[in-house]
Image 1: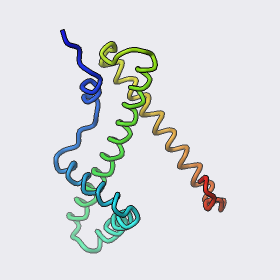
Image 2 (image 1 turned 180 degrees about the vertical axis):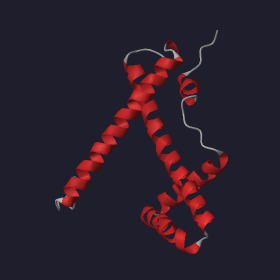
Image 3 (image 1 turned 180 degrees about the horizontal axis):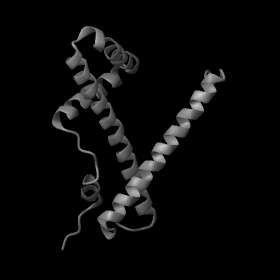
Image 4 (image 1 turned 120 degrees about the vertical axis):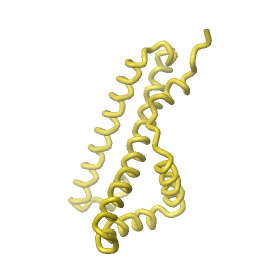
Length: 141
C-alpha cells in the first residue's frame, strides 16, 4: 500500500478560504507587493470613510467582509508557518508524517500555532514599549 506523502497529509490541515476570499486575498497581496504603504493607507482610509459614505447596512457588511478577509489571511499564514515548523521537527526526528496519527499532528500544529501567536504578541508589546520610550528610530526595532 502506497503511503501518502507529507504534502498531502499537511494540506488537510491548511485553512481553505472561500472562492470570494481567495480572489480578494490575491488582489490584496498583489497590491501590497506593489506598494505596501499606499495599500495599507487605502485600507485605513476605506475603514474610516465607510460610515460616512455608505448606508448603515452597507458599512456593516463592509466591516464584516474586510474583517473576515484580514483574519483569514492572518490565520492562514500562521497555520502555514506552524505546519512548516512541525514538518521541520518531524524531519529532525528522522520520521515521516504518515507515522503519526492525524490527532497527534493536529495537536502538534495547534501547539506550534499558539507559540507563534505568543511570540508575535510579545514582539508587538516590545516594539510598542520601545516606541513609547522614544527608542523607535533605532535600526534594531
